[in-house]
Length: 427
Image 1: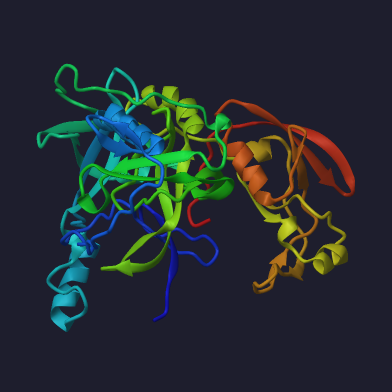
Image 2 (image 1 turned 60 degrees about the vertical axis):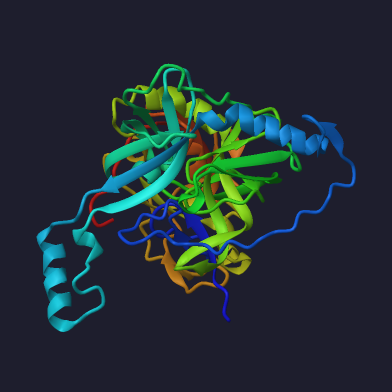
């Protein structure tokens, strides 16, 4: 049987090289996928310490139990409904499917409300709840449930940060004492090999806990609507659809990350399953964005954009770079959009007919070679094109950055004031 390797990111399709993205929250108009439950025989620990009236537990087990008991009431289960598509286009598609017996005839999901589930957690005593943006984006109705309760509460979006796949929601009418925030840790103090505990509701299985370790702190994957490669925490703690937005916790009971994506091999009912490689947004990203999300007033937290198209020189072959007399790394500007921050700073895109350059393993494409080349940002050398996108994304609107730019073989520094900028339609 052919095995498909894919990346699960909670909404739609996300490209990562040869990997395909799917939604962890598994929005659907059909029944929830049922995973097969296989009995597991537990081995007796080699070295155990006696706790709680004679029950034998290792020190590691006792720590996990304690952390889970301390933080379980900070977990939130999220259900969303996304409005049906009753547009003329969707209705015409439905009629054609009915008439010609096309797949989906009589049951076009676009004409029905889509539902989905995800996870979240209290982040402060005010009742603010952090989750993934893709869990609540487009939702017309959001309800939450607390651990150990069947009662539902209406919730509303306080702010969304789509470019970081984070959102802040707040529930109405929570009883006194129900809000038990999970304290925020510090992702700069993490080490590979430390314990990682994931909590959430995979496949709708309320309050599921999995444990693993931090597998890597050097991983970057596309995150958010812009698909910018961002630093993430890799863990082998089992994460599956429904874990989206849930907390990743350390052995001190502190939040270290927000579960967001997984690599998967194979599928059940068309949904990719965990292969032991999961990714979480670092807690320091949450800490940085929290004030902006709280002040968003239900709107989107915008991020700055330079307003350029560029070719990543590090992706070109040595032969092509030598032929075009280009440096080994940098962002070669192909286009600078009018009225953009880059245009206001005087940056210049390519104007020549270009050469037929190629990146390894890909088809040739025409690349203009006479545009400005950005080689450094605030004194930091660009080793790959993603450095530029990642650096700009980490700034706020109104900030200024200094770009080191090469033009006609000469270098100069250019100051750019960052603003929100939307690319023209059909670009």
